[in-house]
Length: 159
Image (cartoon, rainbow, N blue to C red; front, side):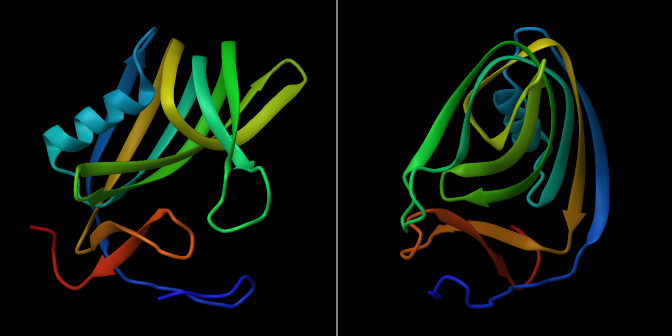
């Protein structure tokens, strides 16, 4: 289902908190890879993630180059020990778990906010909390309008 910019559209469903996981991700480990490994191993089909700590090296999408659909991502590289905190969602697509993690990073007087992607190496430590949400079957599917894989809620529990 498509929509025009500015048109109001919402998809809402209800679930309940399931298991809670707390992770310590150590220096040099990749935040995204580690979280996805935990999500796969524990079979977390829907949930939310919170992270805080320090990022040594990574890449973020900080908006789009132009306000057009589909968007052309604007990339920023982060290197050298930045504080990080973020929140994300967990869903699944055809190729397995999907983590959509938006974070704010800062070092000195500079700060960035955006979607952490591809690489996110820890500096010292990152603490993460995953809250599983039961009773919701969330899948990621391709959206023709945006060109992105967006969440959709299906009736019933995940497989």
